[in-house]
Length: 230
Length: 230
Image: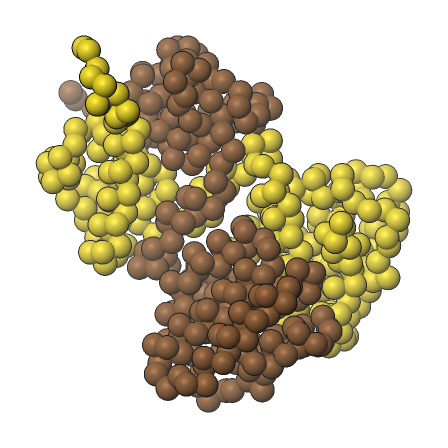
């Protein structure tokens, strides 16, 4: 077909764009109707008629909502709203090769901010058992003279701290960010050493105060924070 | 069709399940092949043949990757890998009506942890201009005698702090968590008052030390932390 001068700047609306739009409309619909977990969605037939789109486009959008954990198909009941796994799709995109450097840097800072702020939850929820587990990790460190083991122990120690917070979202978030440790360690400034070791932190957690822990953790992270200044 | 005794526990493999599987395989493929932003994916024809699935199922999975910001269709080049918007899909699921109470509670704690840990970034990146902006917000608070304005000012103040960190990921994350303020304020313990106000925090940020700010912010958040103990 000949495209006239006037219409040549109009771009064709692709199926993707329509799926984007339908997905957005459906999410707005869920929010505006104040639908809750367990509520049943209209049928595909109704939805595609109401939105004026083909079943294919509708299904594409529904498939996205299903991936996000917002809906589920239930036998006989149809599509039902579900409580989404809020970190599920975050997890799906955390491919360190694809994330741009600024975002990697931002996530690294985010981790520093989180760890600087853990003290209150740690003192609220620490138990004898998990302090013993921290001590076991620290005891093992004495025998480490290998970079791989050092990194693993670093990960084990900080992961255990997140675990002690008793906050599963926080803990999972930290596990997801672990692939960034490589990025961190590559940039590590070995000339700056912290005066507060893992063993010191455990000691404070065991017998010190929250305030001492806040100060200790910030000193422990200081070499990382100093890197940020550059 | 008659279903024999032996096979009746076998559940049919739905199209959803296949899209889940294809989506997972494609993500694994991107990670294992160490593909990077800008690399071109094989055509739909090749992918569906290699995976042994229909074009429809493949397209459903590709549509999900497109939504996650992992791929883009480019004219003439085909499907190209893109740098994902890591918070995009997180944003999509943050419907407070659908998120379960435990997760809401976890996110609230996450926010407290983040704010307790902001001091280093704030002192690293504060400028005269953004301290003036904080002062303007605080000045306005004197005239507030209305709950809605109080909440708005609360939001404006804390949002500005995140902005000063210069970390866009952190800032966006905080904006996304704003709908949770309702949840927070509903649960607020009005009997516990903090000794450190917004005005005090600005004063410390302006003329005090990082350490004073850490202590001040923790005192400012204390009424929230005390709620957690229950």
